[in-house]
Length: 505
Image 1 (tube, rainbow, N blue to C red):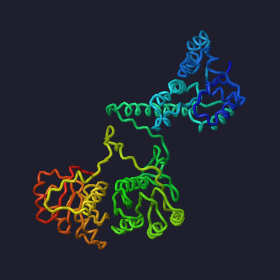
Image 2: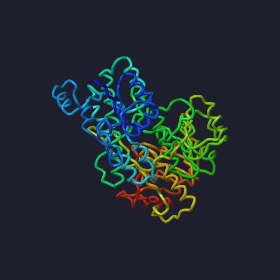
Image 3: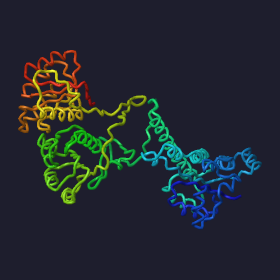
Image 4: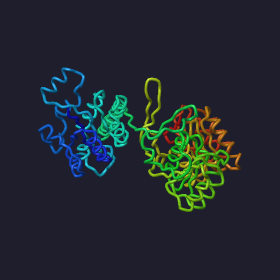
């Protein structure tokens, strides 16, 4: 009995080599239009599907393989007498190898300059059906969906036959492939047609296995397209903790805007600044808490120059991250063998979902994309604000948004002077921020303060007032707001309410 293999591929990488190997192993090749054309141009003998089925491709290629002779040949059970009888009665021949990959919808959907109609035409129909049918009948059929599978498949085929274990593995990969493809389409339709959020579909291929997770006894994996956003230019591979901190640093520095620098340790800023140059931004961020900066992650939203690189080399840093580096800066930074140098390829997404595991499922929320502007700042005290103070309040508020709750930030001249993060008591956060500032010689006189949530009692304001702070920015919303505002008034502190809470758990 003749042996048949069906080939219909959008990605034609290595397909000539695979086809020649199939011919060598006595398979007759069935192929769809453009695949058949390529094979014939390369002197690879094949039969077009339309000639095999005696039915033409119709509707501009929308229907090519959807035919009983094709699906019957794939799905027939070779050990079932009734299947064999029906196959004989209907002139259906077994197809033992199916090689299919799909229209490039995943690439097309990312492009904004392509009309909806063209995107829809790039949704494959017959391909997923062929793949699923082949995978379902893995006991008899081998299904190939990725050029990376071809070499090992050819080697095993040349040694005699494909084992059932290999067919099972290929089937699992095939179903994973169609699941990814279908999920991408479903997500696209939800977004394109503005449908209500009713189901979360996670759809990220495995990119790499990391060395370990938060701790060495935990396994960790990186899924998705991290490399579309970041390029590792130098140093060791990044770890789970590195990636979490890196993202926190980059999100903060781009939220600050201007020419800014953020230094992150355990997802909290231990220094941040906006200045007139990359060098000054780093120097001012580092001065906030140089002790905590040791072993931290530094992110910039501007090019790192030679002067800044020399300054960066003065202490140990896990990662330096920026959108670009001068040639001289890159050579200087590379002198530290293990430190990672990362290039930002794309700015972080402002919108998206934050997902966490809970028993029985997931808990999901939108990213905190809130921004503060002067129009949203409600001055509720008599003391007026200078332009410099307004600028510093917006800066402090932005840093506070990226600091774990409860959070208090002291800032002046668009640089952090003290950071109080992650405390159970807001008063403790205020005390720690002041303690850190004084530890490194920062004078808080004339500085401003930001709080990520409201003050439940006036005591937090009084703690801040003891440090000669001139203005506080906070959400407001406490039942004791009037008492809190009164405490600010009595200490000649300007208080701005935003109406926006920035808890970060």
